[in-house]
Image (tube, rainbow, N blue to C red; front, side, top):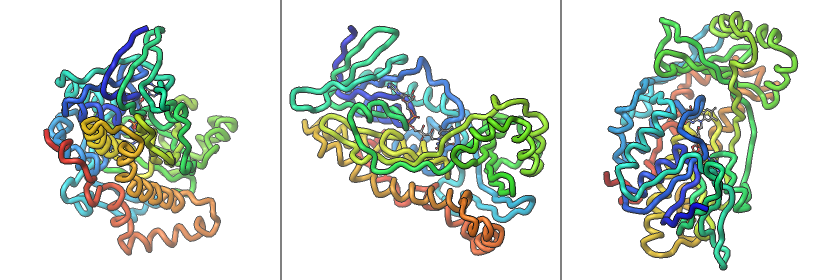
Length: 405
Ligand SMILES: Cc1cc2nc3c(=O)[nH]c(=O)nc-3n(C[C@H](O)[C@H](O)[C@H](O)COP(=O)(O)OP(=O)(O)OC[C@H]3O[C@@H](n4cnc5c(N)ncnc54)[C@H](O)[C@@H]3O)c2cc1C
């Protein structure tokens, strides 16, 4: 069995795990990241990165590295009801410091973070390493993980073990960590199309009698469309067959109608369950949940990656201090949750209210939507609503040690 001892073992090489690993290694902490997949390849995952992501990258002195990655800049959002333009929101209006979002596919983002992390001798990453169970010492504190790599067992002993293994976190289950709440409000069905030549490089929200959907420019020359569906609706559509879906797409405006004529089967769709979830207790002795494992965001606002990396950056500071002081107890590591809990709950609350507005099954809301939305647009609500979600105001409180390049 392969054995390793380290200061920090991070299970999960997604945005949260990679950023936490990089920042800790930059502070000279010995860190090992375990990623169950053989590489960073993945699609339809955290590709629109809102201004708060860029804000954080600036705080931790990584903006220039991220800016050098292949990306498409998105300067605004527009809201359509059928063919009527209801509102236009320029990012500059509510985010003057960072007046754009970025479209960066996750593979180059993660590869970019890995390239930087590799410059620090205390950083290591194992691909194809699946963390399966937590090791505990005599007092019950978490002391590392055991897992499988290339068919063989491995064991990593660490002073702090971090679960950054995503929304379905295995280590969260292993730690018997309970959820404070979990909501499943809607599904998003993603698919991509070639970008029409006249397409405006902005995020478009469309409300039609058949579908609510968003369209975003996908780097380098595609558009990505997300149809919002009620939980279970996709499964029902599948059993009704592709012709029924085609007919319903045909009623969703010109773009969807064009797609309806080409789509052959359900293979084109990548469904995502929009879940909002929060773990009750993020820390145990020697153990910490970060990113989606601690708090899963819904796709509303496209801020999942931002919220995940914000917690990762906070965690890097807290862990480094805990290692320095020799106190890696639940109380010391729990500082991450004390710093982040309120902000995350606020984001979740906004996401759920937004989803309720767009997809409410309440007949009264549905009936009033065509009247209320233009009024809301006139009152400037679409311009104000995103501010608290897409921008971190005030900025994420980071320990000064993680802000030094
Ligand atoms: C379809 C889809 C579209 C999305 N679109 C957006 C968007 O446009 N913008 C946005 O900001 N967010 C978006 N999100 C959310 C975003 O992807 C997540 O919030 C973000 O990736 C969370 O980062 P993370 O590092 O916490 O977890 P993840 O990105 O889930 O990373 C977890 C990592 O852990 C690894 N892992 C899992 N289990 C183990 C194990 N046992 N051992 C070792 N490794 C393990 C996984 O392979 C993975 O690499 C989207 C999510 C989905 C599913």
